[in-house]
Length: 363
Image (tube, helix red, strand yellow):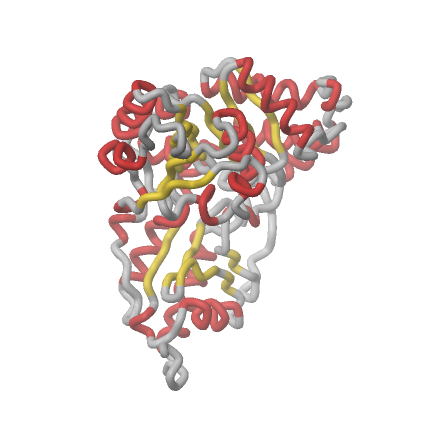
């Protein structure tokens, strides 16, 4: 099902829609990894890592970039770079930095999230401004705003560029920095029909993942000004992120960076196809018009079952997905699931929801 992969059809094959992190490297990535020229990256001597960082900086029109093991580390490095202990970080209530990074901003950086819910996860300045602390010495001080594009837990929603830029400009006027958790920023760029540089230019720092929709096995990139990246490089080592001959992984990242954005439109088309099929099923609620990238979140309370129960039943039919809330199921399209796989998933879901719900399952 992966682009470039020759495999015989298998009606019993697992359709894994838990996340776009489950993708496997393409043959081109594996070949590049096997042939990668490497050196000790802790000494700055891995030529493949250096090429990846330079190419990422070029694509985003930034001064510098840093290859990091994970998006979580990239976000944490940005928070460490822009804050001091006891500061506050403004983010949307269901942001990844708030829910899914083990409270690292508090446990490691010593700062607190200050959250606000927003429709579709898209913050606007009128929601951010009331959260900014007054300049009083006994108040913890606001230092940073983080936005997430696309927004994972709101179904892969995309920030309008004008909204993001307005936030950046007003935050800068208020003396704040703005970091972008752009784990899936290439999906946002494809949805908007713009370049990643164009939609991120006002942010002080940007993180994006190579290991999600771009299909690389490991790694993320943090981007910013030279001095910011210099300090992030030091902190990466402090966090245990010095990876030695990591050009083997960076080689796959280079392939992902060049080849994968061109095919993300297929993931988006598959997600819309999935959403339309789901919306036609009794007991499932979602609006396909809200699906604009590769994440589909739908409500299953009409089936009389919880999301966890639906996921368990689907797993028995070799379709994997995950519960994002008690009654919400998340499915993520990616390069390892083609249209045939999407149709197989829809068939399995139709069978599951048609089955009689277990007694008292929804209580």
